[in-house]
Each structure stands twice: as structure tokens, then as C-alpha cells.
Amino acid sequence: MKKGLLLFLFPLLVFSVFDGYCQSINEPTTVKGNLYLGVAESHVKSNLKYEYVAIEDGISEISFYLTNDVEVDELHGEGIKGYSFNKDNAQIPFGILTVDFKEQLEKGQKIRFTLSYSGTSSKGFWGQTYKWIDIDPDFMILPAFTDHHTFDYEIIAKVDDPDYKFVDAKNQQMTSPLNVKAPSANYFASIVAGSKINFNQFTEDGYTVNIISNKPDSVVNYLGYKNLEILKFFNSTIGGKKKVNSFSVLYRPMPDSIFRTIRNLTNDRLIMFTNNHDHIHTLAHEISHFWWNRGNDFTMEKWLNESYAQYSELLYVRHTEGLEKFQQEISYLGKVSQKLPALLKSDRFGKNWSDLLYIKGPYLLYQLEEFLGKEKFMQLLSNLNEKEVSNTEEMLCELEKISNSEIRDMFYQKLME
Ligand SMILES: [Zn+2]
Image (cartoon, rainbow, N blue to C red; front, side, top):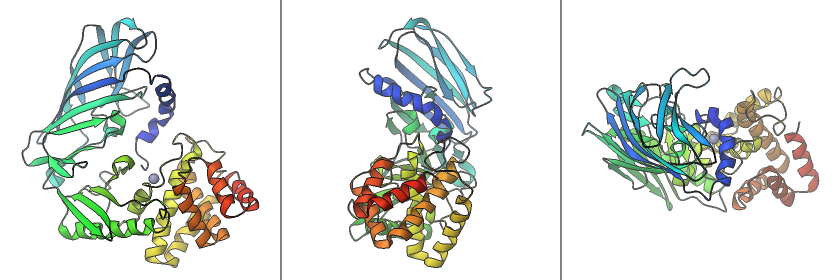
């Protein structure tokens, strides 16, 4: 994923991750219900049944992020005292719905309640021009716990216009209604519906790419061909010892000036993408995440994902557009990197995090490639993926294996200055 709104919530997520480990003996909270989408009015209506399981002793209230665009129609259950929906939050672009219990819950204790809400959504509907609905997790059209603890989610989504069908990327078909299952609202794939969306399959040399889109054939064909080219390139370089044979791209019809979010759902091998189709490099970054997906997201170890993905994109640029274009990009990275602090010593959520991950990190990899030579460097990248290296220490070990301890120390120094 690249620069989604979720990033902004990450500091909160850190705590929930640890909670998750401690609470794994509990049954998860379950949320089941319906999401109704009204095309003409951009209307959303949701009925959700919660079976909440307390994650610790003494819980007397729980809260959710929920879009400001809706009103709560109903919230009731036997143990519920009341609720408040505060839409005026300085720090975040959503409302916070707080549910009060009559009595404190003990850890593991269950409480059931029903939540209904509805309203006209300012986000997710691109009806008139693009005939597209995209219920992105970041819009909070489906509520997420503010403490981000995980839960099982089962939503049946329905749309009122028979011209619209949902994208069922798993089964490679259009469908209505759509059943959504996910371990948490933050990690479901966008619920996407549109008119005349097609699945287009492209196959070559044993590789398959599916383009899901309602764009014209010429665009779809171009994209299919380019994605295959990128996939083949990575399978012969960074993924030489761990091949990926297929994936899907859900290519939205609107320009990225309207909706920029890109998601790489690595487990489902699905990339959700909005862009001008001639800006194909971004896709190379996202596709490379099928390999680069292991560094800890909450620390600067994330460089093992993002800096490597960004440099992989540049390798693809060098491969297809030549050395001159590549060098242009590199000299820009070099110039900006000079002003940046040490990559590994910096704060993941500090003000330079983005430049460190997407500019300085790739620049250091460029310097490493210059030092090792192209062949050794490619061998290193391929080894990192074969071994599924998940932290910098392991990465440095792999570097030492193909070179020596002096080079390892030299590169470590670069990461620390
Ligand atoms: Zn990325």
C-alpha cells in the first residue's frame, strides 16, 4: 500500500497489534449485516449485528470510527445504556460513535447489539461520469473500532441499480449481491460496483494477469501487456527464486486527481489502482510488493518493503526506458537524500518518513548496486526474497554472505548516517 489514509492511523494500530497477541485465546468479535447502496442519491444504509467480546476486564464502553455523512438510526441491545455520535473531531476526518454498556464487561464476556445508520455519502460514489462505486476502508462507511482490534466481518452488500454489479475478484466474476468476509474492516478489499465491468485475462509464457475494468479495449490491452511485462521482469530478477505466476488489477475508471488510493492486497494478489494508464511505473512498484511485503510496518524496518519496492520500480524503468531515464531519477534521489537524516535512526511517523522510505532508501540501494555490481546485487535481491528476510539484521547477513563483512559494515554505516 502506498500513502493511504490508514497510515495516518498507524500510531494507534501499534497498540492493537500487541493487544491482538495477548487476546488470541478469546473468540473474536463478529460483525454481520447488510450494506445497501443507492446509486442515484449516493445513499448508504447499513444494518449491523455485533457480537462484541470484551478484550480485557472492566470495559464499559467501546467506540468506532464512522463517516460523518451518516446519522445513527438505531442502536439497541439488552446491555446497552446509550450511545453518542460525535462528528466534531479535530484530529480525524471521521465521526466517533461511542456505545455505553449498562455494566462493565469482564474479559471474554459477550454483548450483542444492533447498529443501523444511513445517509448521503460524500465519498465513494462516482455515478454520473464513471458509473463506479468504491467503498474504500479509509472512508469509514463501514465502522472500525478506534482501538483497531481485529474482528470477523461478514457483510452482504447490495446495490439498487440493476445496471451495477459488484466485483468479486476472488472468483473472477461480477456478482450481485456481494458477500464480503474479512478479519477486520481495515483490511477488506474495497467493495466495488460498477456498470459494464469486464474481466480480461492475459496469458503469456505461463504467466497470467487479469485486468478488471470498464475502460476501452485499447487501454485494457495496453495494461494487460504492460503488467505481463512487469511480472516477467520481476520473475527474472527480484523473484528469480520465488516466482509469482498470476495476479489481478482492478483498474478504476476515474483519474487519480479524483481518487488516488492504491492498494496492494498481497494475500489476494490484487492491486487496486487509479492512475493515468501511461503512468505505468507505479504499477511496477505495486507489483513488486508481491515480493517486498515483510518489514514491520510500524518501524523504519518498513524500508524493507517500500524502499525495495521503489528501487524495483526504478529497475523496471532502466529495463524498459534505458539508462538515461534511470540516471535522471537517481540524480533526483541523490539530491534530496543529502538533506535527509539517517534512515534507521529516524522516527517512522516523523516528518521525513515518506522521503526516507521512498527516496533515501532507494538511493542507498542504488549505491549498494554500484558497489556490488549489477549481477551480485540482483543475486542479493533474489536471495532476500527466497529467504523471506524480514528485518535489517537478516538483510545484512545475506549481504555479507554474497560479499564480505567489510561491505556489510559499510552498508550498515550508510543506513545509520
Ligand atoms: Zn509501496
